[in-house]
Image 1 (tube, rainbow, N blue to C red):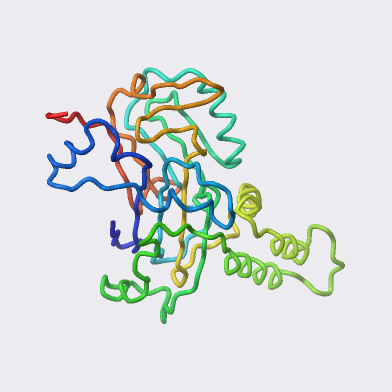
Image 2 (cartoon, helix red, strand yellow):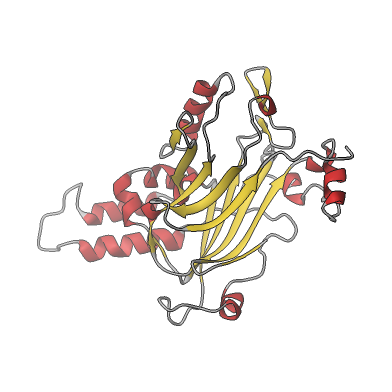
Length: 291
């Protein structure tokens, strides 16, 4: 799906394994005038950069550019509801502990009037790839036609995975650290030069997540309009079956539809102050007439 707004230009897709096998899916597609979509080849390929079997059941893929500069702590990935969730599934507390382990920067409120899960975008994503774009004037507003020339076509036509590559991101942090250093002073473990050395070591996805989970490091990062960002957000292996809305954990299977009152769940990339939304995907169960 193409996203083209005043703030972002790129592509978004949400892959769900075995959705085409769910009862009512084909009928629902027919009602909407669409053909059933088979499983993406993404699920047949090994985990990004490894030979490990891909056991994930869904993948949100985002590829594009932000049209102006943003600090790292200003952009979040969010899952939100518009009203209170009256019933939460059992084992929610255990699930939240796992979530905090996987994403140390996540913020959660499942019991408020508007429940949410939010995390800094650069931390929440499982894999990130950053590449350069030929933008002559990064601060200028661009037209749709100009953006189409800047941003490459959809980067995963055959289910290709995102391979973690954040060298450009960390090189920029190193440059800022070195520029901030004061050579005449004696270097200590807390000087910007030492920070630059620490930054250069952060290369794997897990290292990136832990590095930017620290507020000071996150605030120093910049999303740049002359860079292309490829993101992948995946479910926690086989534990969450998105096609059937079932949670499989500790030998138990929990039917999440029993606890979902039907209100939409919004998956969004937005600013931390919630003033600007770059894009939103709405998920909601829809009854099918002829299923």
